[in-house]
Image (spheres, rainbow, N blue to C red):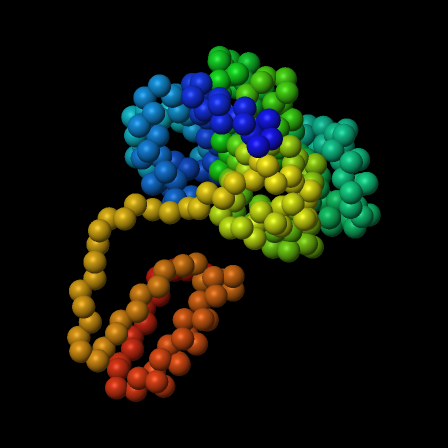
Length: 282
């Protein structure tokens, strides 16, 4: 086992703080799987937990008593500070590295890159203020729920402050084909991370082949919810009611349910099939 990963496993017993950076959780709107995940945090009584949401909302979910929330990103008027971070982006070393990695003479891709670099610089500034007022950083793990510019900012500051960075990665933050013009900025420049958690084996392969990640820091950690023990009542004789739940997008392959029901109805014409789907989409 590589030394870096072995050292991190040993350090797990010494962790005193975990700082989770989310898109907006615990504020209402998305990231529902965290509702289950945070229930387990208080089982570690010797660890301090803090959440730093990037966006702030009016409604907040209830959290276990062991978790604090600090809105370090939300107290800034982005419209006012945007010109400052645009200038910082122009002088960023990552801008010029990206030119060598990609054909950045595509003006629309360049605009995407500059927007990403502005966020990277903004998060760095906010996080550095937070870090200067923090203690025990050598025993702190920053856990980002999305592998985005906030993660890159933490990676940029890690050597200076000595904490660890782990990150989840889902879909929109990994597959460049899902993004405008097939371009996901900066990903190739920020492959040095303590651990990155995927939810599929194919994502591991994609990270290594597309961006140059090494195999060692990549681990599969699937999302899920607690089993509440709820069981449906049996369907009446010769009737089957099927329930599915997902966002309606092509990648969810909901069309396979339709195909399967067509085959079943032809093979079992005496059975009445009913299908209900829960989920929004396009």
